[in-house]
Image 1 (cartoon, rainbow, N blue to C red):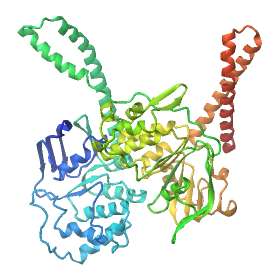
Image 2 (image 1 turned 135 degrees about the horizontal axis):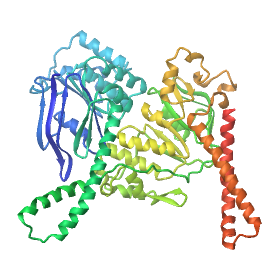
Image 3 (image 1 turned 180 degrees about the horizontal axis):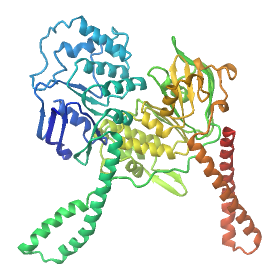
Image 4 (image 1 turned 30 degrees about the vertical axis):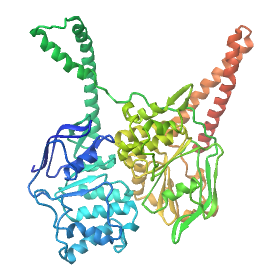
Length: 618
């Protein structure tokens, strides 16, 4: 295997903060490498160092001579007045890929770029068309963030680099584009290094995973699934090592305290070994042991009902006569290509965008928590902890348990030290994570998350997945992250454009399997509503019970409800018998009298939920 890149003993610090120390890794021809790390630990900084845009403290970076490197930045910047075609061809006009060719003196500084020829212009048009960019004379300033990302991607692909460096290539791309890029990068003998949170993408594209953790690089020679297995083995081994060191440390600490200050030469080696042992014993393991479960979230049986709503912008139809009745405890995913109206639908639900026709009726008990793509504008000079305590000091989890602002931040991997940092010191991913905490701190019972996975690291995504799986309220997620959707949602609304919406009872993987099957056009498990219409019910609606099936989670929930109801009824019977028995003390009667109405309320709530599920099942 021909070595393309070799990194040896690389160290990078910002003041007292060391991002990584003495790291080593290499990339050979044909290797597809994924780089994984928590937000704020130096992923993007490392890519900037490799591309020559950032310096480093010590170490060496060696590229193969005359290696052509293509770099896709996380947030590409273009001249807003430049046309799409000119922006796409700019790297070729500059004689390379904006100075990233290694072993050369840089890009051409000739103010009159060479004539590119018809074949390259034609190739540029073909690539842009594949990426669904069709108006090649449109100004770059008029494009959305996702469209600009696709033009930047075309930039890189046109230069045909030997080594592709991609920083979050799937951010702002819709599912169709992600799957196209996945197929493109998987074909042939391409060599690439990329940072991405998309675990499906990592699993299907990458053959090597680099993990940047605790200032060190760990190499796993396999895909994402292999990485998960071996990473857990590493963590378990490290935990065992720290436990052994702690046991020995207590013995050695006692010896250190007993020995006189002036130690002989023979004992000094033991003293030196003690300090090395102390470093191991005092390592902090930040792996979480508990899942955060709230039981104090109440939401009534009426959630929201879309009553034949319509919306369009000029000739672009978002919804037409669309009817939907949202169920209690439902976890819905919304997917579709960019521009089909997913975010507009969310904003109509929240009252931020008016409907053209029809109405949306919201239940009285619904309290929305909205995580938007735009995010929250923070006071840069405010401390992280103060951002959260401005909202509330704690969240009531029920059963007498409370979660403080600091505990919530720590649950989402803000260390006590980071909580007292100023906002301006946070990375982009850490700001998104802080924004997520501001939403959850308001203790909503209905979470609406619009592209929550953009810029969040994989560890944070796993925490958020667990939180949403245990969340006792309602959830709507708009996301292009297939792995995330599979973990969280019960069923999908698929926005296909021009008002066509398909409702599917299942997760994204199940939908893709159904959509690719020959019988998908006639399958009853999904209802297609072209412009919101259907032949099964009046005025373009469809009956919820016609298409609604119990998900696996709901079936398990129903089984648990039956057990809970039986136990509660038994407890209620025992209390009633005790109250009538005449042998109960005054204190016990008082306690039972308080428990009985709570028991009845809990029985009523669980019985109502069981009835809702049984109606769907029937």
